[in-house]
Amino acid sequence: MKLKIPFLPSKPTVAVVKMSGVISAGARSGLCDQTLSPILEKAFKKGQHEAVALLINSPGGSPVQSSLISSRVKRLAKENQMPVYAFVEDVAASGGYWLACSADEIYADTGSIIGSIGVISAGFGFQELIDKYGVERRVHTAGKSKSMLDPFKKERPEDIKRLKRILSEMHELFITYVEKTRGGKLTQKDDIFTGEIWLGEKAKELGLIDGIGHLDNVMKEKFGNKTRIKIYGQKKNFLQRFGVNLINEAGVYLEERAAFSRFGL
Image 1: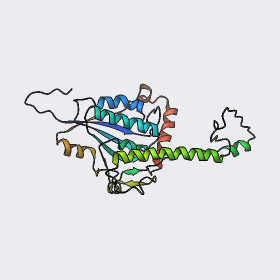
Image 2: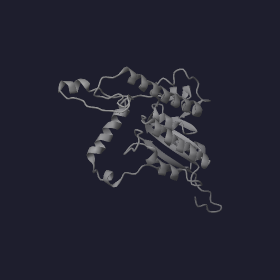
Image 3: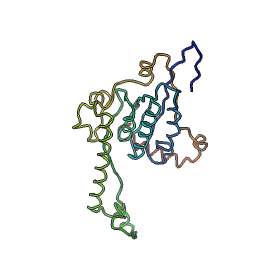
Image 4: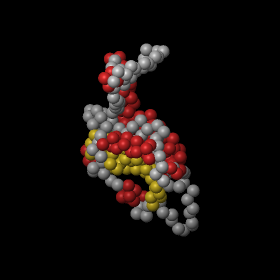
């Protein structure tokens, strides 16, 4: 609780939670509910701040983790009766936009990339490669659907059909969430759920965001010029701080760069 001295007005404070990186379960340097939960709990501590701002820079990732994090934000905001604002840096696409929709208002830069409301599944097929080297694949299952989309076998039509059904159902969950959180602000719905992306001004025109603006300016406009910003973010562990475990860190870096590169970043 903030210490208030009589006759001396306290400066308003906004808690800023950084959400940067790919969204994945058990994220080592990206975003997941497990690592963000203690940070969000501190940021939403009742009586400490006037509002919570989410500083988002994410190309997306796990739909489930996106849903878990967003649900936590909404629950904490309701419990503590605290407004939430989202500010997009380079990109809030796919799961990144899902996170942004957990806020009451969304702001972005004119060059920010917004949208990609869709679901994707990607992989590789190695069946010809192992045939070339005379490698025999041996798989034994109980249940005809257990070995679905084995990368060392040719794709089966029934597997593709099953995958498309799952992707379609997940897409509908995403659409429902956006309509629930942004429904009254969306100016049209024909194009925004196709997986398309837009820059800030167009995203505002479509109702995907509420305005063009940056964290400091918008927060001072809402809470006064003396508003203070308090940053809450993920801390690196001992090994990460001293550059140990470089192989794993390099793998995470490459994974993130591949995700961001889809949007030219």
